[in-house]
Amino acid sequence: MRFFPALLAAALFAEDWPEFRGPTGQGHSSETGLALEWSESKNIAWKVAAPAGWSSPSVVGGRIWITGSAAGGKSLRLLSLDAKTGKTVLDKELFTIDSVRKIHAKNSYASPTPIVDNGLVYVHFGSQGTACVRTDGEIVWKTRFDYDHVHGNGGSPVLSNGLLFLNCDGGDQQFAIALDAATGERKWKSDRKTYMAFATPLMISAAGRMQFISPSAHRTVSYDPSTGKELWYVTYGEGFSNVPRPVFGHGLVFLSTGFNTPAMIAVRADGKGDVTGSHVAWQLQRGAPHTPSPVLVGEELYFVSDRGIATCVDAATGKIHWQERLGGNHSASPTVAAGRIYFLSEEGESAVIAPGKEFKKLAANQLDGRFLASPAVSGGAIFLRSATHLYRIETR
View 1 (cartoon, rainbow, N blue to C red):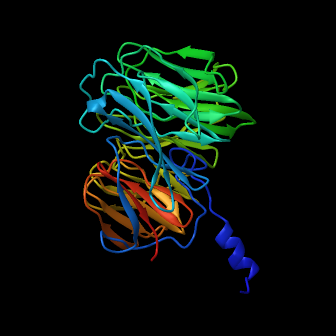
View 2 (cartoon, helix red, strand yellow):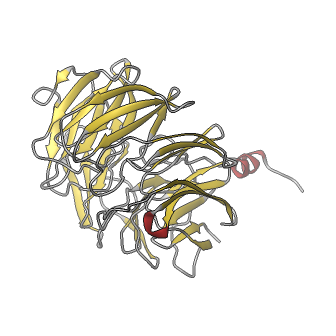
């Protein structure tokens, strides 16, 4: 059999998706050849039952990692599946909860997405526990932080330079914290007086320094990731219960300000102290999301509101290029792959569009069930998680 080098390289290459929103944490994949269209009877490589939980899939080295809960939320678990077959490889209980409290209807007892790195899996269940587990299931360390997360756990962890970073914004206390990734020991903790939030932070390099961008209620803070010292912060009034993960590009941090009346704002990342009056490049309320994270493609920023209005703006100025109704309700964050942007509604409809200043819809695909978890992309396939199942979608 003769192999052509370019085809062989393509066959061997499979980009991992190691954390929430992928290898950069901003919703981008370099994978090509992905399916454009699918349904329950088309381009489904496999569909397997999944436990209760809204953590998005992480995919590394041909294995999928998700968290889930059983026994009505009393058993918090880590699961791994073979990415090619969907067969369960590991199902391990990490924490048991004696008294389960009521959570928000759009939340679960297992919502943060695991991080997979160098043979270790970092798992976070909010105030119910955080753990590091080897890929063979051996627990390396476990820890808990006592705070009242009100509506349940939310934001996913961030791993950088040997530290594991968490947002812990409860109704009673709020703080950002960095742990030694090898031991779980606290390296720093920065208290803040805000309110409950559920956002996933983002690590960036900007203005000649690493910055840990941490959204919270009423304000977003940039911390020095090695010390926890505040570098700069931007305030936004009564915004709370923040969920979207920021994105970064062109020297700007793009973030949504939270519930009530959210706004999408762009903040220059080279400031110091309170930059609310000096470094906000633009802000836009029309169509801003409460839940889905934005995505940056070239010179344009794309986002979708919880009610299904998609928006494309000029990233530098906030000028609206287009706004279109995709339909349905949206919690999952959009994903960029194969030169397309994939949107997924709670009702299981995926709208696939072409990036650009003019709206061009390429496909609309429908699956059964309820979808709040964001997609993952790896090995020529798209992985979607519903309330009851996990899908591998690829061209058949």
